[in-house]
Each structure stands twice: as structure tokens, then as C-alpha cells.
Length: 48
Image 1 (tube, rainbow, N blue to C red):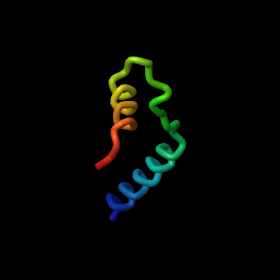
Image 2: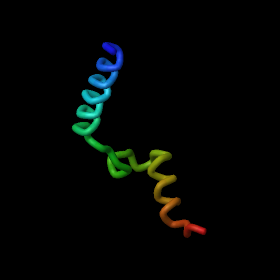
Image 3: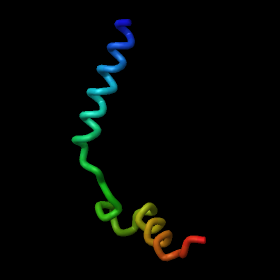
């Protein structure tokens, strides 16, 4: 029982921390970063 309560508390505290964390985006990456290039080429390709 104590283990279950500890797990629930840990998950709830972790959820609060995740909610307060800044969400980064592609705009914050350096201009030549591979993720930025993939994102830009993915936007240009039409979906099938």
C-alpha cells in the first residue's frame, strides 16, 4: 500500500514539473540543425 501511494505521489509531482517546463520548438534550433532541416522539408512535401 505504501509503495502504491509513493508511486502515485511521484507521478503527480512529476506531472507538475513537466507542466511548468518550457516547450522548445524548431525556431530555437541553430539554422543548420538536422531537425530544423527535416521539419522544413517535411512541411514542403504533400501528404499522400
